[in-house]
Length: 329
Image (tube, rainbow, N blue to C red):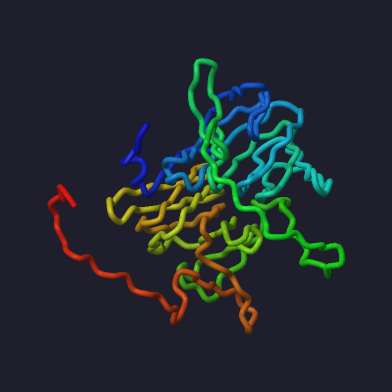
């Protein structure tokens, strides 16, 4: 085992026809895996090494009406592509039946029962599973707890107080959000753009406050053939829903033209342009932007990467600059 330096330095990945590629059956050791069962067929579109283990993206099908239980310690966004996905929150009893164009968000701490015959695309952060070929077939490797992993237990509390008479605590946020017809939601024009242009229309499906500032999911619509320059400082998966998106890597000159069903992944450090008339579904981590309603009622962008007059401590310069490798310290 080692580091794939070429893949880990890949700042952009493009998968043509991502939503229409064939799947491989998943084999689980006991008929029940960590988040899947024996009825899963799946294809990994964004592999963990592509994002330096920050996020992944996959498409798949569950080919049975059987239900199975799973516990979320990670964030996941799921688009229903076909069929009916049945999701039950085991703590609240809430049941949702998702169909084509619906979106789910599942948060850490959720105990979920999932099933139905459906096709879906899932985007997760951090990466909960890896997939390997075995003599029996494609099998998952869970990343949450490795066999014989060395763990240090935390120290016990100094005391445990009686909380029976304590005033009411803030309500817990729900661990599941469901948006029916999410992919057909109506975007709103961005009136005071900073990182985008005046032809940008957008709607936030799942906002940063709903994911503890970890990630977001949006629908965006660019309504002109003009291009904007992006200096990526976050991870982003973008799925083209309609139109044509033209992307140029400014460091290599590579140009990709994405259409319905194609997927882009953009990594921190990528300098590129985005242009064309398109509709896109995007998931970002961490979240670089927030959206506010101004005093005039207009939708305004707040760029979290460029706060005005932010106090930042400068780094110390190097002790020396040497291009030849140091042999001994």
